[in-house]
Length: 98
Image 1 (tube, helix red, strand yellow):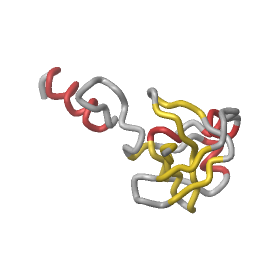
Image 2 (cartoon, helix red, strand yellow):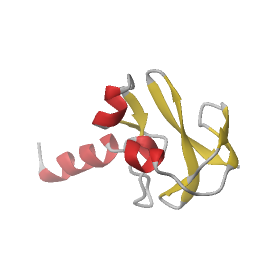
Image 3 (cartoon, one colour):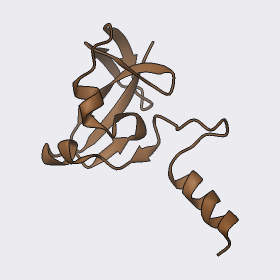
């Protein structure tokens, strides 16, 4: 496999969009904090539990990519989009503020 093919595979696997930003809803690996609490499937925007759990932004009405409504009591920004994490064992979804 060529270096170019490997790089393309890595970019695709990591959920990078065409503009170089990471797709906040792309499937990702949960960090150890999430895993310790029974979650093993995290969207890219929520892979780092410490960011989500320490969020201090204003509350908002959010919505996940699956259409689930979420009342975000504290928010954070991921790649320019404000939202929060919504857990539904074993998944952790990023909810975009509406």
